[in-house]
Image (cartoon, rainbow, N blue to C red):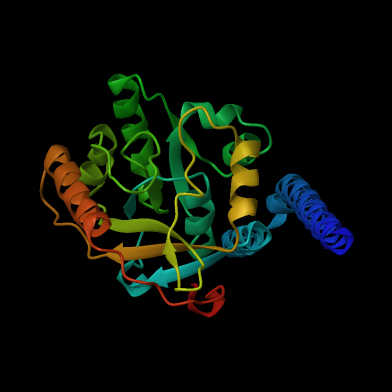
Length: 282
């Protein structure tokens, strides 16, 4: 009886030690993430004004790749060669704030984000500095104004939009708002599509995961904790063929929605277990 109790106590001590070790590990990683964000802010303030466009893109790509690494998220690219070489409108489904980091790690570009993002601590300020356009989700008129603001940018740079207007858990694609598609119609810019999925590593290979989903009233710190607890994760960007040109914004919204939703609704195959595909980035 005494021996049994002794072993039980040892197991209890071991469990407590593992819990504490896990907690200390997350605190340590959070410290590294905080420093990485601070470093990014310093780069934006003091280095960016003196860099060429190409050097800025390299800094952005390196920074976001490191952030993904600190979060324990691996980037997996599918059909990246389908992404146009010229400036385009990139249409994506929306699951998490990490979506933006993954796309920037693939190729730096401008974004249209909901107006609330501008008020986020640290990340909101960085988004402003990187030229993000902000749209009010409750105003179709404001959406049309932002579409007009996008026109000159699309002559020089690609812009990514999340036309669902909010994020989901990744199992569905919500209806697309049409106003921002007007920019592609008026500028005659190609419209590219990317399907974003998240996977967790298991003994049976990568399986679909909702750990990165940023939904409801979830805060940014809560989301980071959730991601760190679920690591390692994999974010997959699957690019689709260019959408047809010469159609109006409503038809364009319907077409891109149907293509992305069809991919999400497919039975998700096990993605290969890969580390960061830095060699495939351009």
